[in-house]
Length: 305
Image 1 (cartoon, rainbow, N blue to C red):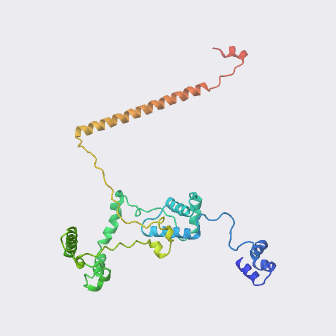
Image 2 (cartoon, helix red, strand yellow; image 1 turned 90 degrees about the horizontal axis):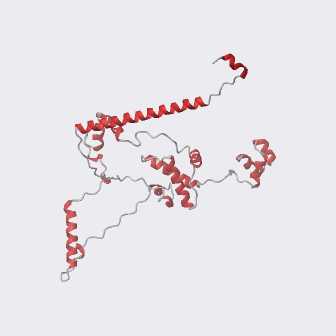
Image 3 (cartoon, one colour; image 1 turned 120 degrees about the vertical axis):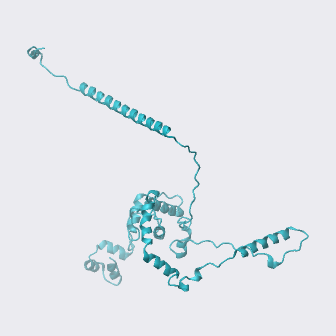
């Protein structure tokens, strides 16, 4: 179709282009006359614009590369947040949008069943750790680690010193603290002489605001940085509440075990009693529904009592 449109713009007639390129005449005529834009499709438009969908795709790849792949419901939730950022009265995205979104970006996004390495439970931790632990004990890994650090063979230039932080001695930090304390004490007194300018510590430098890595790389726009948040590596600590406990003796344990057995036996007896009652009712109902035998009055004496 595109080649037919270009041929018509170069001077070929619509009839000749239809015969040459085997395209519908009305469709080609609409595109040549400008009634329909080339590449336009019928139906409702996309709920998210192409740049917003591309930003969501880049965010999914970013989270997956950092070990936190998004689920289908999380992807729909982020898409709904982006849509409501553009239109506050927008409705939530449905499963149909999620399926079409995955089909449009099937090259960049795929679905897979989460492996055990994604979320490791306490029960599976030892099994997951055993493989890497056994591989790390191999001789070649130890030799490679020594060579990388410059331990053996000895190589002082193996470590890039430009990436190291400057050393800070404890006495320097103590001196700064003492200077600050002295300056504050001198300032508070009315008769004391003001401290010299050299003893006053410099004002603290405010920390630089952290820029979202996807915003810095240009993958997402700055207005979506609050929605597509950066991956947080801070360890969340949970406070465990103390629970009162007591020691159970052997006699108490046997008593609890006997009570449990009695409860199970009582529950089984009650279940059997209900089943027997149900069977009795079914038999009575079946007897009531049986039709009575139809006999002729003149044949009843022949049958006898």
